[in-house]
Image 1 (cartoon, rainbow, N blue to C red):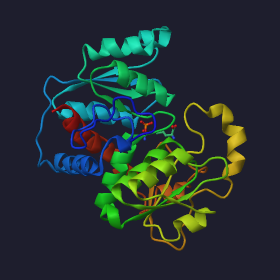
Image 2: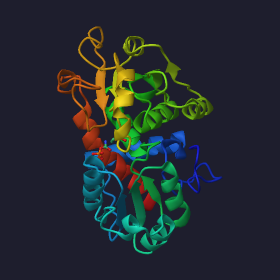
Image 3: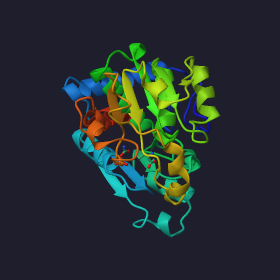
Length: 311
Ligand code: CP
Ligand code: NVA
């Protein structure tokens, strides 16, 4: 269960959760079902439609992939996605989130939210009596994890046989990926600078799922046996003022040709990337890079999630 889940879970392990706030709101079986559904939708073998269905999309941070993939995904499913930016709606002018939640639930069949504090997503889930999907909070990015696991399954190998490395900041993307890796049975080595780890709660949740990540001392150690190396920006949205304080800690954590010289590992990044910081242009643009498949798979994975949540 995600650490701060509200109504995202149910006593019945087989019943799909009401909300999707983090990856471990799904059971292992439900995760597998979503990924399989995503693959079948992507291949055109599953023609499920969600006609007259509306997804309200609440964005308090910028987005390219999340916005575009949910919007096109809903169009392909025969539904509609409604973009709500902070300046456009009363939320940005002082209306409480819990009021926004109840109003949107009166129109939309589901709400996707990208916000700052994870608690905001929980408040929405508590007050909206339609499914709430986390499109990124400061703590978690579970839709990204769905796409990442789909990509690994397509491009690297069966999830239970893959070793991954997380190198860099222990941020929202890394936290959800680690828990998703545990849920899916991937081995994960984690190299994060002191003070910027994934968080003890993530290790505890992974342990509960039966596969704790291995925290290692250096990026070199993390990538040594990895089939896939994953990194993300060192300064996430909302912590720009911490940039000068954070960057020195990441010296030596860049994913570059030297780090990957002795491995054939694939490279992953959720994007957007800061070339020259956490990854070089050379690695990002190399044959080993899976980033464009990851980006496309956001749409397919989310379609798998939407049909499971809404049909
Ligand atoms: N990876 C991801 O969530 O990208 P956006 O910020 O462009 O949505
Ligand atoms: N960690 C990044 C991910 C962006 C998709 C951020 O939160 O800004």
